[in-house]
Length: 185
Image (cartoon, rainbow, N blue to C red; front, side, top):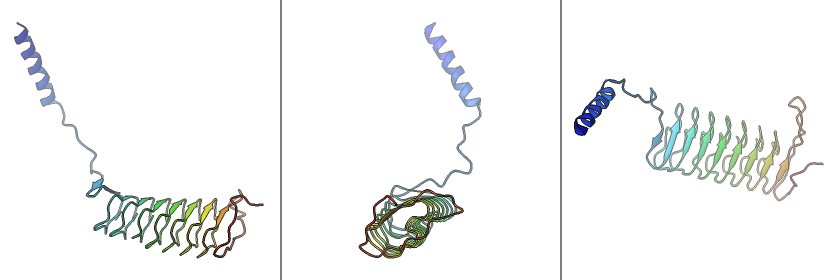
């Protein structure tokens, strides 16, 4: 009797699964994971990657020019667009946009470090922070347009004073070797 009841229950259960609608994944499926621990989602994100590994690109043309670089993260339209440097992180539209071979950079905010080409170990947090930096290294800018005029200066740090967008702070031009504290007068 037990065997017959169990068989009947198993048959009923399998019949329900067989007749139920099929579970479907997201349509269309996300671009998702690629070989070598790489993830891309968005129009032309990581489109030209050949040998690079462990990159993540989310957004329109994010990491578009990357062919051989590894360990990069770009989130936002145009982040790390021309990049072939390793270990960069860009979050925000056009962050690290023109970076070509610069490595170990972090840019968070719209257009943060967007002019950087070969600069190394820079940190920019805020809209337009280190905006004009091209080859400068070891710089840290925190706040809206902080160190926006720095182009090739090294080892600078600046924290922008809070202000409204209607009255941006005066640009600061620093030369190589000039150090600033993270507070402003």
